[in-house]
Length: 73
Image (cartoon, rainbow, N blue to C red):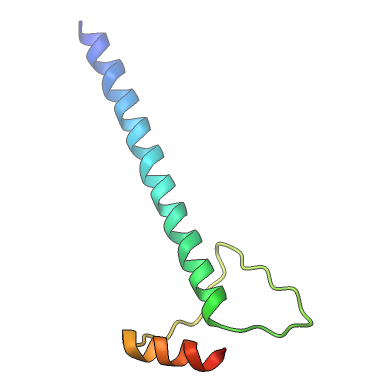
């Protein structure tokens, strides 16, 4: 009986870590796509954002973000 609880605890822990890792990866993906959509890059260079690449982020108020996005075309 004790080994069953130990096994269930290990399975729960592994699944919990798997879910947290998936959520973290999804968050990074969405943030990367948001940054790619908001900032423009030179058209003659192929840009690949790596997961460890840091990009300077500016904080905008929601209205300011919409205004800038609408002006960028």
